[in-house]
Length: 250
Image 1 (cartoon, rainbow, N blue to C red):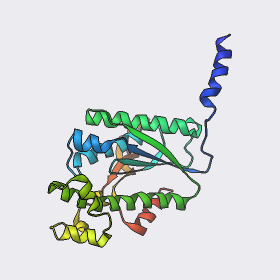
Image 2: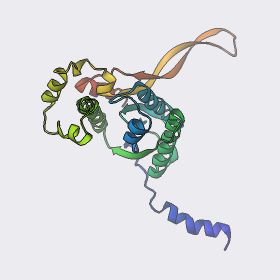
Image 3: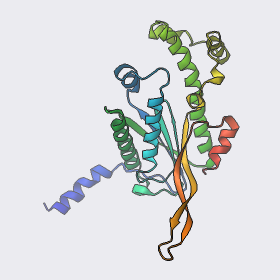
Image 4: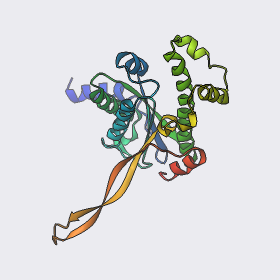
C-alpha cells in the first residue's frame, strides 16, 4: 500500500470526531489546574488561602496564553482557573475544538511549569456562547464564584491554622449563610470587605493602547506611534459594573 493511501485510510480515524465552532459563536476557553491543591499546599507550601507568588504565576500564564498565537481579547484568573475570551472572528485551526483545547492546555501547562520549576498541568474545555449576554453572564458567573470561594477559603483556613482537621473545618461552614460567615471572620478580626479585591474578584488581563515615540524610517522624523500592551487589573468592578466592563470587549 502506498503511503498516500495508508495516510488517507488512517487519517479518518484521527479526524472522525473533529468538531468546529460555528462562525458567529463566541468562544470562551476555561482552563483548570489538575490536582493543584496538592501541588500548591502540600508539595510547594504556598501561603493559604491566597499567595501573591502563586497569583503572579497564574497572571503570567494568562499573559502567555494571550500572546501565543491566538486572538484573545480578555483573560481572567481566579484561584487555579483561567478563562479566555477569544475574538469573535478568531479562526486559528479553523476553530477546531480539539486543537484549541489541546494547544491551549499544553501552552498553559508548559508556561506554568517553567514558572514553578515543577510540573503543573491544566485541562481545557470550550464554552460556545451564541450571544453577547451569555458571554457577560459567563464572566459574571466566574467573578461571583471567586467571591464565594474567597469567603469560604478564609473561613476554612482560619480554622485549619488553629489546628482543626480538614473535614471538620469544611463541615463547620457547610450550613452557614454568607452573613454568618462574614460575622465569623469579623469576630476574629478579619473584615472580609477590606480584603484585597483580587482575592474576592479575581484578576483581569486585557490589551491597552499607548503612545510611544518612534522614528519614521522614510523621513527620519520622530513621530508618535500607537502600540498595545497587556494590562493586569487587580481591582475589577463588581456586579452590574462588571457586566458593563465585560461588554466593552464584545
